[in-house]
Length: 150
Image (cartoon, rainbow, N blue to C red; front, side, top):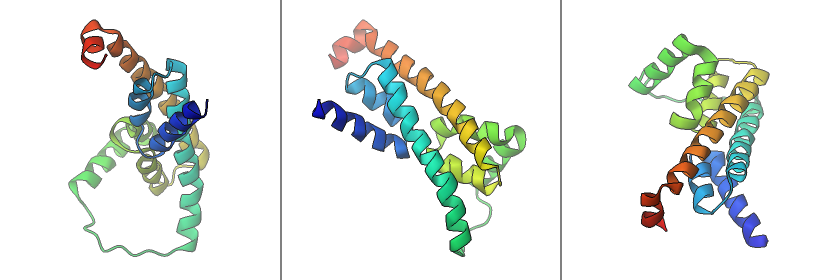
């Protein structure tokens, strides 16, 4: 039983930083689809909620001056996505292309309300956890992959 909780906790911690770790590591650990969805979504939402509120505290208590190049190609792509799709677009792309922390920071930088950040990320994270978890579980039922990984 303790081994199960250690696996669950390790996957949860991985999901704090990278969303895709949940479905991949959960399937590798032999978790059910429900367990994969739960651990993946819980890890992402912990990061989102933490950085939503920690980001506000950090901005109010620290004054950082970073001398970085102002416009990079990556920043331009983020601004283009923001202009086209707004916070829903950023939330939708966060689990796949960004990290939970990165998506939260971007939405905070564009001054999205905390409630919207959390709700958009909640929906996006849940949908992507279901899609990726079910996809990986299905792929592992194909006989070729069972022989390959079995």
